[in-house]
Image (cartoon, rainbow over all chains, first blue to last red; front, top):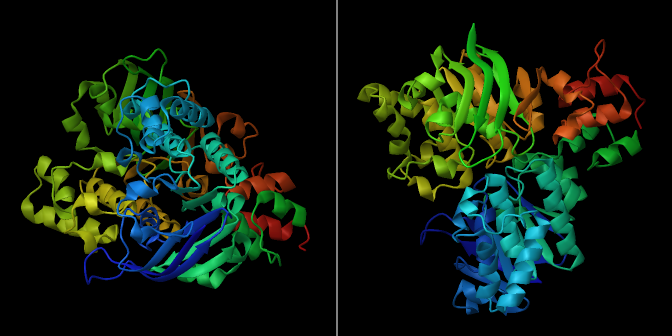
Length: 263
Length: 283
């Protein structure tokens, strides 16, 4: 769905590169991008979405070169990005208007946009707050609202930047269900995330970014088995994986259930 | 000595029908590190705000009971007075930034200027916290150009610089990577060891288990329990309060392995490893 070749980017002309020589292909496997703060994860997804322009290299989405598009608006129907900070995303006066904004903007009819919006708001359990001002929601609700706003646009690619921040177990469960529902519709779900337990339980593929480069890429289980490389990227395997490893388990364990079966 | 005394605290936001805090009572000793846990909307952030006086002075609403912080009764003292004793790091660092300062350095100076710290000392304190939170390299950046993680470090730095007796933190590491969270927790722990009282609302249970002396479990604005992490996370009814115990506790519970000579399950990686090594034969 996405092909990235030899991608480089720096924020200042001639400045230190934030990303250098990135080559990646994305299929429909749900994918987590992990790595330290400052590794270039958010910059990378902004480039995918066309919010930033690469210094070098190409990004092809559905065989269309993102560079050839003059504005991010032209990509908006294909790729949706949920921002890390909901306050950067929210600007309408009611919850319903907020979620309808994206669909209307990509030329969905009003009736369909409203139906899409309400359906997405049901998924995040905010459909009883349609007339509320989004700024009166709690941080965890705002995060869910932003996810709904992008889900309602029904794009083929959905990127979630730190979706689990401020969520309790119920909130995480809702996000888990949304990701599953999107996977069932054959969409590419990508996330930038520091919550490794959530990665282990929900994402098929994991890519480790370090200092603007891809350090490791593969099935999540394989990635979390590479202790030394993870250490180099200053990333930790999930707690349960670490416990199993300390106890001398041969296989890489990703969930509590797997651990108990092995015992 | 009790640094914080909360007695029968009840609070209702304006325009709300429900009590956000309902008959909360607990006490905290000087230098203790307390974790506040509970599902979303259980009252964690509201309780934090009640300790710094934003509840009720800023939010207004109906208020009953008593909150004493460092000897000041919150209801009868201004936010300015309370701010000399208690500092709070907001849940969302983006909302804590003043918006009136052009650099990280000046942003951290803001609180110090407000309480009239002499220039020389201000400079020393700012340099110290820039080093402690590892953000020296961005000191001349505009606060709004920072990444989420850097902004969160700055938000913590600006409060620590004010040297409060009591430090209240609402999910202070949500934007940080695992290594960064560990660093920040270590920094907070070292402040706690220097005698600063720390109150921390948090969803990362592994961190609560590892660092907190005691844990306060909230549900629907009420205190369910205040006890050591081991006692709290070994409760059978934890999930009914929307809280998942650390993964180490869950796995030991599933295998029925308790800590030696206690009725509790292990709550940290090290403790779980210890009991599991002895317990079931390894594959």
